[in-house]
Length: 174
Image (cartoon, rainbow, N blue to C red; front, side, top):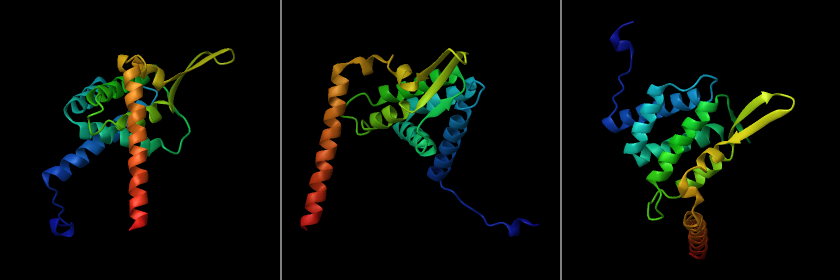
């Protein structure tokens, strides 16, 4: 084979960055569901990218949902990994904590995925098995315990549904 046997693919910087981000996210998501604890390096890389980019946060949550949307429940096999995932999602939540943030609806996706993911602590398989859902890890975030947060979230959902219905009515009358 010679170099001429291969087609050259040129990627611009944005496409390369997008591929790299997807690779990082997918590798991390695969690691989080293994029996071994996620590496500190992987956690650091994800947390660093989450602190710097709402687009990364959205891609992270979207990839979780896409990968596991058909499963009614998703089991994490390592107790530390559910904490790590909770820390990442709490960081994302804090990045979008205002209803004025255009990505505020990402909270709905986080709540959805957090209700599906759990860790099962088996002290004794017959008598003492406890499921710890990701949402219980997230609920330690003070934001989730405020009434204001839930009222804004509900109002946001109602407004979104009303706007969608108005758009549907307008498009059907044209």
